[in-house]
Length: 468
Image 1 (cartoon, rainbow, N blue to C red):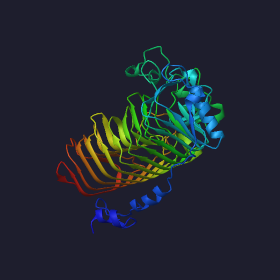
Image 2 (image 1 turned 135 degrees about the horizontal axis):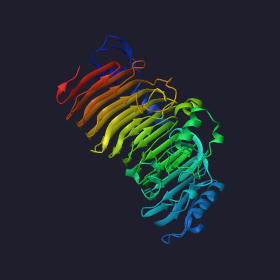
Image 3 (image 1 turned 180 degrees about the horizontal axis):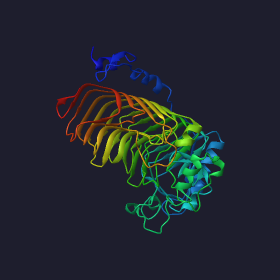
């Protein structure tokens, strides 16, 4: 029986590896997808409408509309929930919009909300997560904490106004607007201090950053929330990551566009989240299009909440470091990820599928299923798995990552440097990689495989040649 038939019909079958003749077991796969989707249910809202104009918002005059928008959200939530409408026009928010339970913040076509680039507008600090590390920092531009049944919907635009003249320079690189003498996240009181606090397990309540530090906020972050919908809206030029739910459950992200070429402008980063659907979205970003995460180093292991049961369907990826990525902040583990029917194509897209970690971050990544992906051009590899990411990271190297059970099926690619670029550690090999019914054309250097156990190829053609 062909391996492809087994992958499709009898998951949990025992196979003989064509590489080293060891018996392996294929874990449950696509037959679990419908059950996962059935548990992802978007919120619904009472048919009660609140117009931000009635709370003092004034379009097109560049006055601060933040209070009016938040007052409408507060009134709506207090009265049992409903829909807060931002009508067509130009609005300005000099600080965060704060979502509350049972509220759908909806925008119309022709609505655009600009956010301030003044850091102190995002004070007081809130509990958040930055690069997988917990702290109190500037509020995300749109924020929710421990709320339920929340949504941001409609055909409008939320514009973060991130640029080299403001947030992006904090990255600390000349290509992002930084010059010598300017502050950056590399300053001793910013990223290095947070990493030290993480490694030393300093209580989160003592990790107070914000004013005088230089850790950029994300665009929209529900934190410890349930039943979330983000649909149809466009996000432009975030200070850092765009959509970043943390420790959330039951999330639908549908029809969303993210446009931003700034540093770390990841499109969608569910972190330590369960039951997530990302569907019909468009990503054109300065970093990973989708990057699934679960905390970094000590924080990820302390909180110990995995990202799991995540479904990605019918998305388009243009520029970015990776299309569908897992890691690198993955210390809390990740499992059961399904990606299908997506298109990826750009000379500025580095990889299609990527898993990344190192022996400081560790983590288990397992049961990753990818099928029906059309790839025009990627700069480096169709599939890259590397367990040596960021080799200069400071910290104890006592946590070799585990990466296993990755399935690619019906993948077509037109141009890349590598087909498969798999880099395992000697003491923690990558295990059980299955690629079937796929064609990688225009591959410059073929495959590069290091420390991989049980690589099974069935009907994989690279530049027209069958691989085995």
